[in-house]
Image 1 (spheres, rainbow, N blue to C red):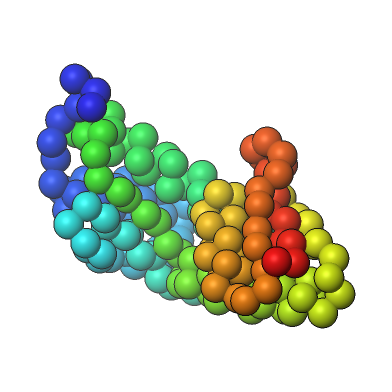
Image 2 (spheres, helix red, strand yellow):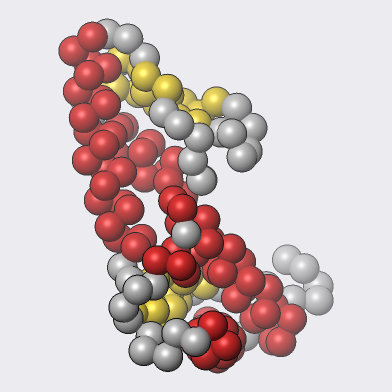
Length: 161
């Protein structure tokens, strides 16, 4: 572990992130948005932002959301010295919707791979999205997965088993 790391409870880290995100929402003029800290487990907190017209905070394929999450983590690290704990940011339930859409898409592609007996390479995606695809596909009989390429062009390939 980093010798400069400071043990800071994840709830305290999430509160620092909440203050940062609330300030950002205020500066952006998104006054009807609200944020709430949800402790998922002892080491993980999720800051959930809700409101109307929050697409700007999500961006294409969640890119802006990931950037905001990274910014919030950086702010937490600088203000608290914390290097442990997991801090997630979600806007308008995007993460769950994305997970469900990826699971449906993966199931369809897996069915095609099994039926045709040919591999299928998916578009490049984030490591979090790749994990969802791997987990979903590996639960389907007759399909295996691998990752190919280097970030940010890394992709999942589904293979017939």
